[in-house]
Length: 317
Image 1 (cartoon, rainbow, N blue to C red):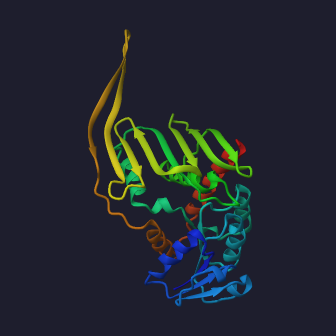
Image 2 (image 1 turned 60 degrees about the vertical axis):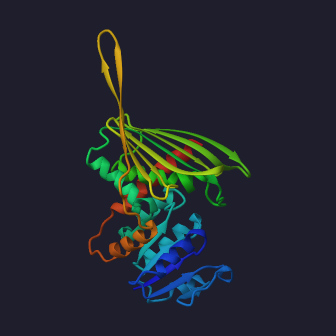
Image 3 (image 1 turned 180 degrees about the vertical axis):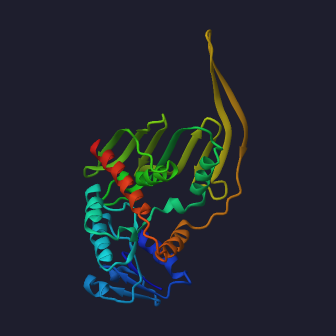
């Protein structure tokens, strides 16, 4: 199997590193206009001409890791060739581009999304807790993604960091959409959203709060997901104890005379979860997905929902 990688910037280098260790991949072709800045690998063929690159008949799958503003263009090129293509987040620049792809191409089932956290064992564990009703009725989701940069010219902090929570929420809530969104953002350094707080309410009283920042000396990647039975914490900065399951809650018992809040507290469980690099898992899943003979449009629908919510958030700015 031969892979065509488009873009070897910050994230593209990580993708290339993982592609090189795949036994199933025979040849890797790279398209990047800044080839002189790349530390070349003898097992990779490099191109800086788009026409020459897309003229290679031997490429089976494509992976796009360019700045977001170029995603639509390269996805279109891959679909024209009727090839499977994996795209890094954000999917495209806006919801209009999603709808355009949907209208122009009948093979959007060949789009696979590198929504990396969906391949993270901890997020899969959160999903299993919900499926097994271990948390009870879900109450809220609280996320913090803050750090000092990395700054991008074509996207803001919402596109870069909050997008993770949008696709995680879509995954955990089985595609449920929020019915109310509130956004507070701070524009600094060239009219760019560097700090944002996003609040989203859902029809079943579930609430999600997302805090993102490019201007924090402290790096944090943390999620709290609370139910009326238990609360789970996912801290991606932790090495071994990424997941903590808290046996805590409140039993509310109203009476005619007085409202009673009974605090319930118990042990903290740290499950033994095997962690493998998410990108490695993602690439394996992409290869597996490309071999399926079924036309599965669920990934595209997932991406469309995420971009719709992102569009609604941007309208609030």
